[in-house]
Image 1 (tube, rainbow, N blue to C red):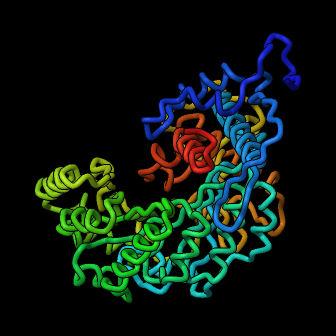
Image 2 (spheres, rainbow, N blue to C red; image 1 turned 180 degrees about the vertical axis):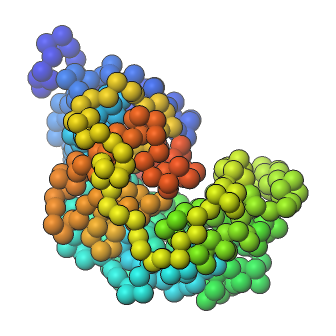
Image 3 (cartoon, rainbow, N blue to C red; image 1 turned 120 degrees about the vertical axis):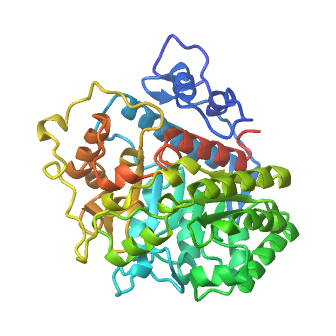
Amino acid sequence: MPNNGNENHSKSSTAFDFYNEFNFHKSRVTFDHLTTIIEGRTSSGRVKEADRGKVEDARTTGAERFSSFKVDEIISKKINNLYRCYEGIRSGRVFTNFTPLEFHIEHTDQCNLRCNMCIAHHHLVTKNKQQLDIRLLEKLEPYFEPCVVGRLVGAGEPFTNKQFMEYARMFSTKLCRLACTTNGTLINGKTARSLIETQFDYLIISLDAARKETFEQIRKGASFNRVIHNIRRLVRLKKKNGSFFPIISYSMVVMNQNIQELVPLVELVHDLDDGHLKVVPMFIPFKSLPASYVRFYRENALCLSDNVESTRKVFELADRKAKELNVNLTCNVDAIFSRPAPEQIEINTSSNVPSRLTESNLNVDSEKLNVVSDIKPEPGYCVWPWAQFYLRKDGKVALCCNAPTFLYGDLHEQSLEKISNSRGIMAVRQAILEGRFPTVACKLCYIRSQNASLDYLGSNLLQIMRKFNYIG
């Protein structure tokens, strides 16, 4: 057995042993449970290595083959990186000694549709369409092995980018869990087969209505029949190839225009493949968004409707129908109805974007940025300022998908390490540790207790381990 640097432990513990203590019947891993297990299985802040020996069998993901030793090596890096993230946040540090656990790659702002509720449709993004320079992704590639999730999304339709599958393979060869959101219009046979061959993990298809007329009124430029045809073909090819991947999920932006479609949409999802339907509210307008979007929000946001009681009944009916049909329906009704009132919405007719994040405009004492805070975050805190790296297609680094115009770095000019510990992002972390919202977007965010949590990252790591037969 190798020396783990602790003479008090006569037997080392593998990552398998470490994670095998979880309750795998739960979809999420609790923060305290994971912390307790890690602290009991580690010495000097590192997960102990086991004597692996020679392993001859191989596992396959798409066209890439990995020996079991390589799988073990990469997953161990992810486990150690996740632990360092847990340790750093629980210690109240504003600086990081780990690499990002999720890369959010906004690789294009090109889109083939003009959807009513999309901020891009209201001219927030530049008319000079861009695609990410693949050399920037190559600069980040050495950090993909310790990473857990790679999201290939952004302000546009991902499959308009001809290099999309090349980006995906860069992550998949490092055993990252891949995800993207698509409008479904461009998933032809070739793309469907590529997704299956690459073992792309999670495909979220925007489906805002169950009826052709409503769908095409919302998603201007889309053909409802074509999207449904593309989904059915993908499901059929998955079955033909005996593939579990990609897992298909559906997303509905709920508003006055389509609320009556919710129950029929649950039925449609059941008919397609018994998938998962996530219902989300409209993007909340704040002062950096154009006035046209704010007007649309005022007219369509459910929280501003005069029929809140009857609308809530629709959600109740949808929930009952989902249980009846065994459809996984996720809908935070309270979040949908707790949107700001009209008088709280600031209209901005300017096209200027917010300024760069610094400790000065966040009202944070710069002398506190290099010390360990006495305040420890609880489960549900947003961890993205520590754990996520959001790269825009222009090479700028933004706070997150909810605040893509709040910038704190430029990958063209800076290294990942320098960006991850720049004073701007450390100021954001300090604000969170002090129980404050560093930006308006943070205050209005409805997902910080869901995807922006350490439980989410732990759950995704478990899924990677299952995918490569690392655990049962």
